[in-house]
Length: 463
Length: 80
Image 1 (cartoon, one colour):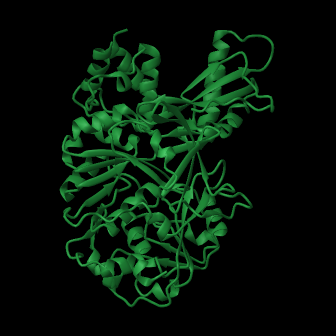
Image 2 (spheres, rainbow over the protein chains, first blue to last red; image 1 turned 135 degrees about the horizontal axis):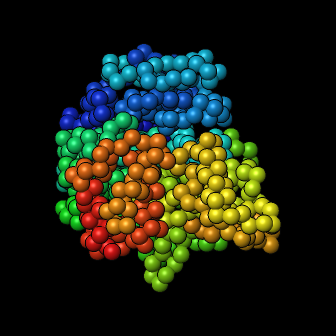
């Protein structure tokens, strides 16, 4: 990799840095200062060639560090905030982290068994950039079936493959996202701002939607992205008019027509597009015709940068933008023999249009948080009166989906209504005790039986 | 039960279940300031669909999402 192809190299070669900034909820950093200095004190030489775990709470601190470490660290692992301590331990081990970068808000990093803990700041001081250059591996986290997250391996090239140079005539964009930039969707936006002559306004962890939108409006943001759930929240906040973006982007969840229409009506001056992307498959495609789903013609473009096909019901993607593989999960390969990644997203073709209808394996996406039905079912099945259960998704206009459960009771005698209500309450109690809030079923329905496949497994709908 | 009463009682119910302290249910209060998070609203909207047979978020011709509690109630009343 050429030094110019690092984030710092790209910034240093830009001729328009003067007015460009990265802002967090508590501060603003000039990109010109950052390109010439460091937020890592004198630590850069010590981080050279190392596998570095970024465990900051603050997004601005993390953004500055990842810009600086690209081309310096051999690997950087982007940990989203709020990762449980046991998962952090597993991630640090699997990614063979040698150093931890944290900020004042990080707790528990002493318990990870990594002796080198450095603290990053948001103050820029003059500093030399060490040689040699390393082709940095970027590691992003994605939720696993059960237990710790999966580690997904990217490079700057794969992460920026979908970012096209903007036309010179366009004024400098000021990008914002509701995502955390340690998530794939948020990182895409930060990289877009950095590569395309823009500024970036980060989200703040403890801000209300109204306060966040007011701050974004104050920064004069022009381009903004989020999930449909983020946008529904923004539209209901009473502060939607605080921003006046030129471009609105949705990704991360199934986009329905209602949210597209709503955004167009609320922001008539903006173009509204949605994108398909995932941590594993990278950015697949953009849809800018104002309609949900995507044109079926996308599937019939074998020479395109991104090749797509539907196989066994799910969308498969092959491109330079996909992750190269997982790290530390034995011999599970990300890609099939033909180089296509199975996204696990079930697509239905109706005429000239394709629509997303859910996830393989019945995985439920509650406002961007994945729920694996088996985890919830095992908790429900622990109730002595339960024979079996099936957890599935129910469509929801606020979070995209919610978790619901069908339960088959054990024993031959049908319990009376009072007993059934009591069982329902008991099941909910054990779910609330042992599961995250979004995994607790919203409704429990008693059914006489559940369909089982020839292979002896519960039949799951794609929902 | 009227739509209004159904909505206000379900809001109270969800708040209790999710251990949230909510503001007094005044028509002018902004929904997101009530003290309920997104998941609470998702649950509320699902319950209201079951109780009232209405999902105005998906079916409404009027595309603007409600912002205050008063808007929210009217949103459902208009959909009925």
